[in-house]
Length: 336
Ligand SMILES: NC(=O)c1ccc[n+]([C@@H]2O[C@H](COP(=O)([O-])OP(=O)(O)OC[C@H]3O[C@@H](n4cnc5c(N)ncnc54)[C@H](OP(=O)(O)O)[C@@H]3O)[C@@H](O)[C@H]2O)c1
Image (cartoon, rainbow, N blue to C red):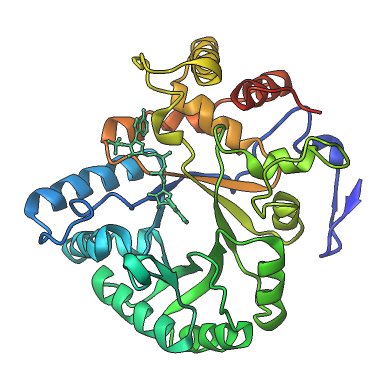
């Protein structure tokens, strides 16, 4: 038995463990990074709008109600095309959770390198532009896209306060942040940050690798993910997993270029997909759902068929043995 902060008690025996039951709040997010006709400065076309609508409908069909954007995606065109769709379908906005990100300043450094900007002036300007492009009065969630080394946490908190009180943003979160960076921000912004969006998948499991290497010489690459999964559980933050399908690495049935651990993993994924009677995508996403806490994979395919192939993820229950076998095979080395 365990007592929670609100005084309620949970029975550990009934909680995710050997039974690996999935919590109700674990669901997929649709990532809009590829909508709008690509990373170019061409105007958004009616075909781009048709393709975006098909992707959104595919996502809605499989029960996805959260859509992830960023001001930079396809140079603003992802939000623009989504905004056109919202404008043409007035009932849609209230049915969905609309999330966007800001804080990356594209091409502002030497040799057009990206820089980061969490200043009040920049964030307010960007949120105004985001809501305008999306044809919405408000965002349900705003995430800070990547850590700004010059972040003034007090200034960010003040900016969040302004955005919230102007009714422009309901909730805030972060992306690609370490536990220490989140803690610093939470010292000034005392409302709970709702999510940390990080790369997490069978093929990119650094957040888990670091957890099992405690006090061993098997020091994994320090990606700043130390304690992140645990921190998010402790503070009821969701881990939004970007790149969850590893761009189809393990799920394409015809992929002759695979070798070594990638090939072994793809074969294992295919085997489990057959045994569970689901798609390979469902197996890979179910693997993420089983990580303790709230993990929300953000699928980024713009192909409606591939979106639909993710539907089964909600019904698969991998065994503990299957889960570990997938991870170890994808790592290509044993756990300590
Ligand atoms: N916070 C961050 O820094 C950050 C960074 C990157 C992404 N994101 C978010 O995460 C979302 C997802 O990222 P992602 O697109 O890299 O993840 P993903 O879902 O793992 O990969 C989707 C990409 O893989 C391709 N793909 C090839 N075979 C596929 C298959 N069998 N099934 C599914 N996709 C296949 C898709 O092409 P097709 O479209 O042709 O199917 C698409 O280009 C983005 O849309 C964005 O919202 C956030």
